[in-house]
Length: 386
Ligand SMILES: *Cc1c(COP(=O)(O)O)cnc(C)c1O
Image (cartoon, rainbow, N blue to C red; front, side, top):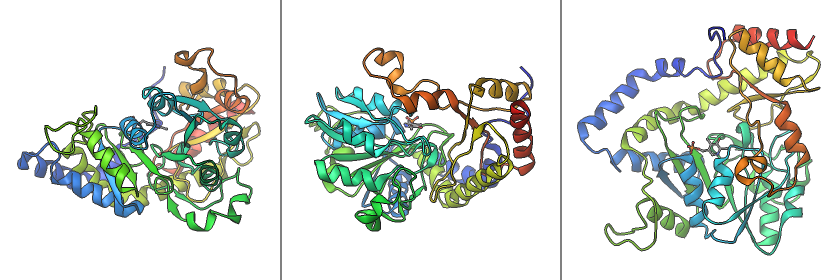
């Protein structure tokens, strides 16, 4: 293994930009002595709610907890079915299974990598209670059609926004083919992911677009009752301290992380724009390379990952060559959720998701990435495929 020349993600330039502010915020919390549910937590919740345009934001310990608490606040439990994408990080399906509910997978759209609304419809049964789309790689899922289906069948919708903080839905999702423009699109146009459905769940894992320096997550909703339940579940199921009403969790966001995230939030739009520029440059540099498919520069996409498809079984070879040149790359995700050992044998194969699992390759991306570095990456990729 050669020395890393271009990592898959470099958080150092961002830290350089905000170092003084972050250290000021950390010192302020250390001096306040309020490490659990200090004032920064509430302020951060208010700032996120305002930013994404929702009534309530409830800070929790991780993106995974945001999904679990969000699902429970929507009343999902034992025996319920939740339709979701096979093509995501396991926290998505795990949150459903951990509640005794059943993840039902619907295959994805090969252009957007996101759940295909046509496939969702075919999976609805009398036990279906909710749909959990994931805005994978930072690209909004086909929310127009998903909200339409939910309305038609009386289902809840919870958005997994772990990779999409700051992404906005403009109705240009490739699987919509304009259909959703007929009905729900107008009311959704321009909304932030997370603010569209009944519940949105964010992750502040350090590598996410809005990343903490540790774990963190957020549940957002416009529903007063859902918010009240989520707040209660976060602190051991108690509305009033020591008067626990239901089994809950210890899932608070640290005050330190809230203070750091408050410093970062005002920069997010700039950073997301930086990611879009990187994606645009990659697309230009890769335009003439045969044997790959580059991602669409869809409106509102915030490129948590820049993911290409490498065709003809050459993906692993490309990744190996990149590694040999000291260039980081990742496969998100080599095994779709439905085919993981934990669910072995329980689910039928999904042709699109299974195929993309063998083709996807995420190239280095971060907001400040220099175009010279992109050129180096592209040269190696094109060199292998020549
Ligand atoms: C990161 C991630 C999660 C989990 O977030 P954590 O904060 O790590 O718990 C859930 N879903 C998706 C799609 C993710 O990428």
